[in-house]
Length: 599
Image (cartoon, rainbow, N blue to C red; front, side, top):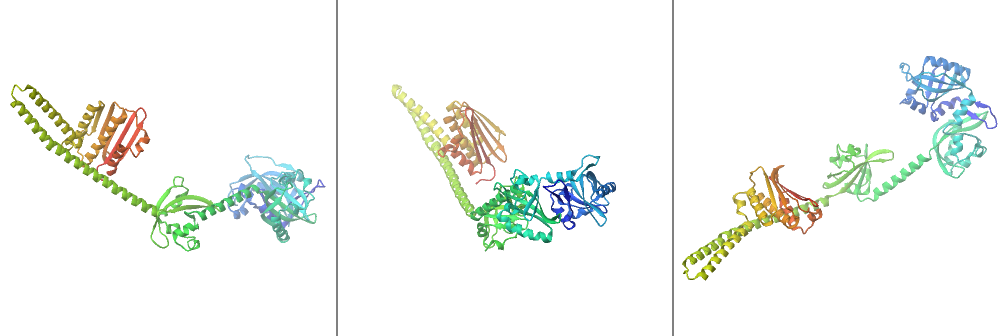
């Protein structure tokens, strides 16, 4: 151990046998103990980290190369402080040498054995380096004065020495601001009981392990430090050596983390959702909502139990909480409370860091009532859809019936009337030219009426759909629209011929009619391209025009009855409808209807 005296230039060194090895373990500077008989006896944790030693018990196995031991003995026995390169191995048998740059400080001689402190500066990167002899005062000046940690000595509570790092740490401008003052002036009231306790313990233990204390700087700022203390003798006078480092930032981080955890737990307590914290041992924490959800008397009754006991679906998934692709995903599953029927829940799983450990956070919501409501809504929609489909079927049947009645009954009557008028015309006297002209006009009117009746009957239910099928009906309808609108319609069927059941054929035909009606009314198009083909186990109808393009908002309006009718007809068969428009380029309507099942 080293002490600088403020009033003298000389350097006094001393060795306290019973405290040296223990003090070495708490020293933050990498260091070890070497003697001339056994080589390297031990190194402290800081040195172990540099030497890449994993277990403390392996430290005593470190050995020094024989050639270096000989040189070390010469340096130690001569009492000179020097720097040199040491070759160290991890065991007596292993000859894989690790070179370190070290400073050798002879400290004492005991029982004909010379001992030294070996301060490790770091791993040596070059193979050769000549030892540089230095005197004691210069080496100790570097070790203590330039140390990045606070080093101080006080006798009878009066500060005798503080290194430059300690001066800066305490907010002083020079060493004179601290030397001669009572150390208790700088101890925070919260740390006074601990300091008094450690002072009494030093009389027995001689060296005390690190402890966290709070100090008051000269500017009044409170800082946190981690301090190692040792009881020493300075020229026969009892003294205390303190080595510490500033941990204020770490403590602030710890306090902020603690406050964050406290807020987190408070939010968990008042959250209406059930929250679980899962660790390796099982359930670590549950909030009141979770206790209520599981129907258990208290949290202690389930602490430590595997969450899979209540959520079997998480078996094999709980380890995926750290997977970025899985985090935040919602999982609907069954929760089995301690009593009663299973509950449908929604589970969100994320990793969480609490109290320095990684765990899994589960946020669970009871969605049983929501699922029941969704099921009822689905059933209601299904019934409405079935009713709509039934009404559509009834409507088609009525239209077919009316079409037949018009075509058969009215058509026959008009045909009979035309025949009677033709017979009447032939029987008229030749002198009745005016009457003959009237009859001729009446026959023309009857012909027009017959055409109108046939057109109405075809609009209600085109016979071609029943007689020749869907493709022929679409071709006929396209020709009719071209005659009325002047829009060119191009058809493509793939394959050229295929059969479709009557009900699906009616649905696709009506959708095709409604789509062309919308094009005529709103699109201002000149060309329409129609494709009908089999795709993905269903029938796909695509109608594209080169018009103004429909606005996406228009497709969602409730009063767009034509579009709504198209969607409802397709939805009955569990089909899909896509309507996309591009301003100035046109609109594309795609309808897909499966050929197997429907709603």
